[in-house]
Image: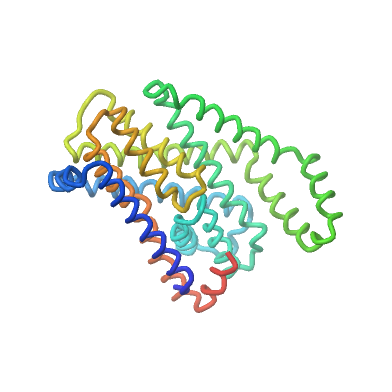
Length: 325
């Protein structure tokens, strides 16, 4: 693995540990330790299994985009899985934009330009965001104050999609950009990226991929439910509460643009668990730490393994392509 990438992951991991320790100190470190001691680790296979379910469906979405856009030449399903999983190592970059690493690695396999394939990452993020909004929307009755945030995010998302589909408006923007003295070399790449984005975000593709995203991300919401069960939490509509908390906290982390949503996702998850389940701050912090390590950091770990396997399969240029990303 390239040194700069290893350093970035270690810095993010250190920050993640700092966030977990800070939450523990704020909540009551003894209560957090006690909750870890009483947690039923027998539910861990279910938690990790549901997380893997999410990853598999999201890989199918990535592969669907790849084939639909005609960029899968020479990319077998094993290579496709390596590309997708390698991208997860970049989940701790701001808004996950580092997942464009997949495009750089794809170029290494079949020469597809990064400008053409990078919009797939954008489409993945948009459909993941829509899925989280829909899952969050299912539980809005649990926490009415979140309705304003929900509506605002939904309006912004729809407006962005309509903007991308307006070819005349985007062509005008490209024409204006082309007149700028420093933009001559950039315009062709932007035009290529826009054309890919327009196709990827067509209403048919958007519908299919959003449905896949809703089902896949519900897997991790269910994983949160099993974490709560492992802590001995019961109660009415627990699955709905777990779904709302996980979806809302993940979405808040995504729109924060912080690496992996670190800090924002953890704080909002803990706060919502205390408010809505309801549960004490100590167990809520424990639940948050466990679900984050079983989702975010589990994915990053798989990404490290996949990137190493890709390096063995395709050689040293992995280091170069990761910088290009």
